[in-house]
Image (cartoon, rainbow, N blue to C red; front, top):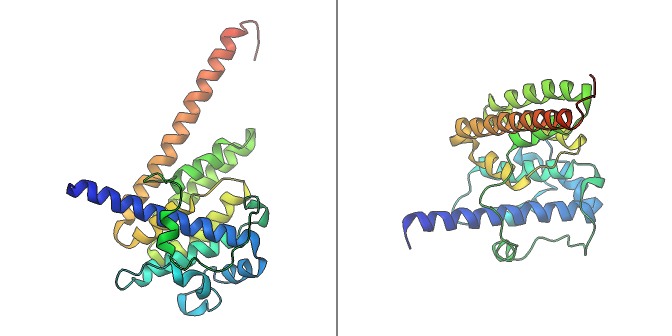
Length: 231
């Protein structure tokens, strides 16, 4: 096995674990109102001020050596943001399971294969603009762009402070969040904030440009099919 192959496999395994964790948190919040309240209580709180969350989050923390506090904080913050969504946001109920898997790594390995990377927060902000109608699109563009730029300028503490409101805005306009990718980015923020910020902004503007191009093509095609239509 080459070094690159081994690295790719570790990255894919890590992605599967993050997907398994965030999916389990979503299912838990959907099926157990008490657990959802407990997780939501940790929104914007420090690790030493979230005693009700430990039962659910602690078993999922990586066990390969000492886990950095910033990584722990990311797990707790994402769980709290998932719990803070409207309950109608969650998928159709299956069988409730309130306790974490005895072996989260085994649970992750049983998940369906996940892509190596997910949808970035930048793309989510772009969708908030693209999928809104008429005049509202212009308002959302200004809001989305300013919120995204604010996030990219933050330290880790600043990001944790501003992220819940940004995520709430996206969920209020029914834009899905790739929780696993957000968790991955939040974990990596202390050392890779510049790279993550660049990716968020690039994805935002790329998707906005693509949508404008598709709209222009659609308008041109409509005009060609209806040459007698006046503005």
